[in-house]
Image (tube, rainbow, N blue to C red; front, top):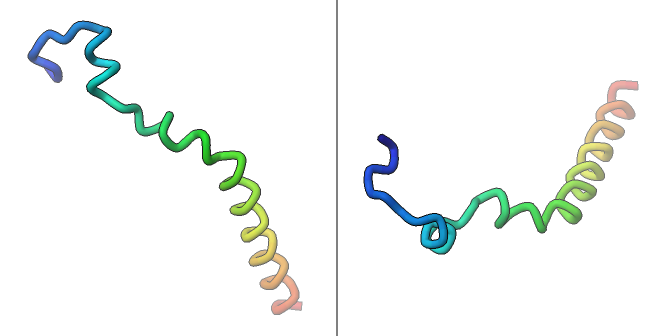
Length: 50
């Protein structure tokens, strides 16, 4: 129902680009940077509240 036109498996891989696969190669850079920013924000909140 969601895909009414029959598509061969070899052609569907060429037509569709997976959104997760386009982002997953950036994870080794994004996760440590986001963790560092989060730690900095939490530390500044802790110092401000103390």
